[in-house]
Length: 72
Image (cartoon, rainbow, N blue to C red):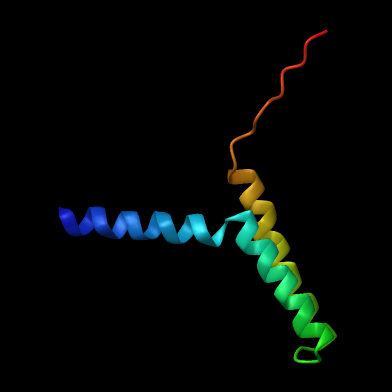
């Protein structure tokens, strides 16, 4: 039973990091640097950028919505 708990914990942490907006934004910045340095071409950049933007969108969907209350 301990092994199951460990595996679930590892999976949860991996998903948390994978969908962490700060991590994804850092990967987007690094990808832009790769393009500027000529290490990836436009087609590869577009493909990878789309995947990262999809992750960022999913991260925002997974994030709890915080409603701001405003006083009249």
